[in-house]
Image (cartoon, rainbow, N blue to C red):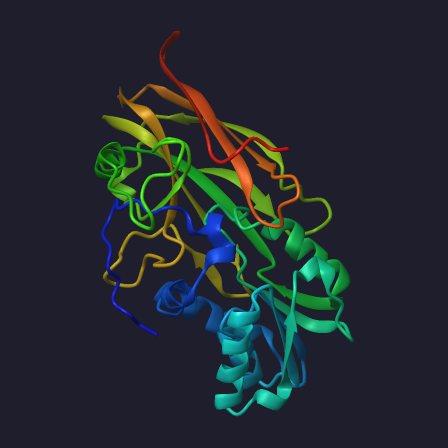
Length: 333
């Protein structure tokens, strides 16, 4: 579970969150080898699950989170997944570990299934690197309302997404040359989507700003328009924006994927960061302001997926130095 990463800083990949239905064994192995992810979830489950609890692992995948819940003393764990094939892998994993009798596989989309009982803990890792780019907001809100008993624990209980403008020149050059991993350039060209890439803190041109704060309640909305302004702190070439999340998994365990230490396990292999590129880089200096509006729209009829649009300008005093306007995916129906 500690596989060596085979990628480097500023290496753009097609966004994994846009292809959930196509995740195969290779991506599940990548998640199992993500040291940051694994350590945080294991610690949080050990803290949140009490002996005798009934647990739902929503989006169980290969079943590792359900396994840890049962090892922590759960009486039984429901493992829910939309993929029948990957659910079979989870069944085998739990049986091989001696917990087969206490693991209850459930196949389907979470909205469309019912459980025979309310659970004490809902565990889920359906987070994208911007929190909401795996449609987890309505999924976890629904799970809280329908599956969790009053006073039960949702893990994660809260998550925040952040943005910062970056000078990611190597990542931008890779997009210009078509050097994108995970399947090549998207049909609309290199500027028609966001990417997964570990972007170093040294590339930040300004301090991060909070984008969204989710408690996974009925008050949350997964469609939004947020406008942020960043005062530039250093000279550099603006090539886009870095996005990431910080998730409060349990009372004392927080998962922060903003790190950039790939070799040391301080970066997330599976999530990486969200890179929102702009087509034409803009030289900036201290005193400049970068404004960006980021919007999210759900896709009609799709269980997963969304359209992001990021547009804005670079300002120097009263002057507009440059404008940009990009969007990912098809327009919402």
